[in-house]
Length: 349
Image: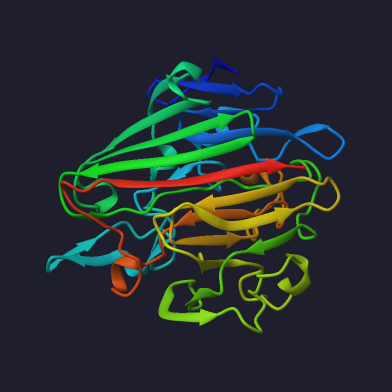
């Protein structure tokens, strides 16, 4: 296994941005960078052994510094949506940045995807039982960041092993009660990023329930069964099969409640590309997962030329708008508590 670092540009303030590549014993590799604690390439073989990158990326740092769809980024302080950007903690009302119509999306105007994180490299060490190369990124989000209370210290750690398993692990603490919801926003195409639409990919989602949402994709608070709906992926089904019934959202952009006990690592999804034979299995400790079929990629510079449905996202997370729904799994983080969640992506063919 090996870790290689190369310069990848710099921020507007002149801070260096570094690209770090982790290569396993089979020669398959992933790369990450300290801008946005972002995942870049994930290069894995198909059924014939041909390697390709399966994660949408930009060619240069310039597009990552500008507004973009979140390609591979760590999203926070609160991924997904908060209705009207409002919530209360201990009787105190808070207003955070409204940046998506009337609501807060992905933590506000400048979320964690557009911050410079510090970097620590942690090589595999068989003697200590560490079987994966790791990169740990750390960010200190100040009190009042996008309106959120508390200084929050966050780490995002990527690990890549010889089994072609990519593990993303989060830790966080806070100085004041706050709401925290972290995810990775990678856009997957198991045929390879230049292979076109992913609608013929076939998915299993380990969930019998999902959140009901309004026209702004804000949860109503109701929890729905997937039975007899376009959202039922309990048996292997292509994204294409029922997507035409979702014209209001132009595809899937919905939060599933992952079966099993939250806080334990358990299966969340399995997606197969019949053409290449590549398979992505996702396991997570998170309570939920947003399925997004890249409905708003515009085919222009801001999306790297990729168009609608050229990828899919499996964003493991806590439920959107959880601060305003006491019956949802809580996103409240208090001083003295430690946020710790893990998601594993396993690639086979």
